Image (cartoon, rainbow, N blue to C red):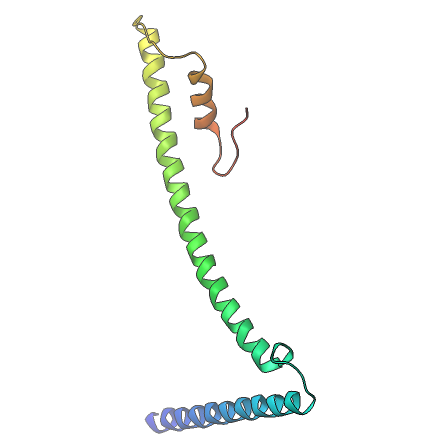
Length: 125
């Protein structure tokens, strides 16, 4: 069994080396072809592919950062909603027990709207 695995590893390393050779050969041919035809470096397919790889790498990083930010935003909104619901519950309890609750009238509907709002939705004005 180990010899089969070793043979496979050798085959994969050989094929990887062959693919690297083919890639380098194609790059060289593309560079020579664009130089012969007088193309600028911006029209060079190899340069375009390199820039595309860089853009893809940046995109991947930005996507992972965006995912982290979205998760943190959801966590914060969940925490805020829980706190707002707690405040609303306390205000209702105080009103039911006859204690005077002093707060601006405009803030209560806004708190209720915030508590019922989904993450990412704008608050109605």
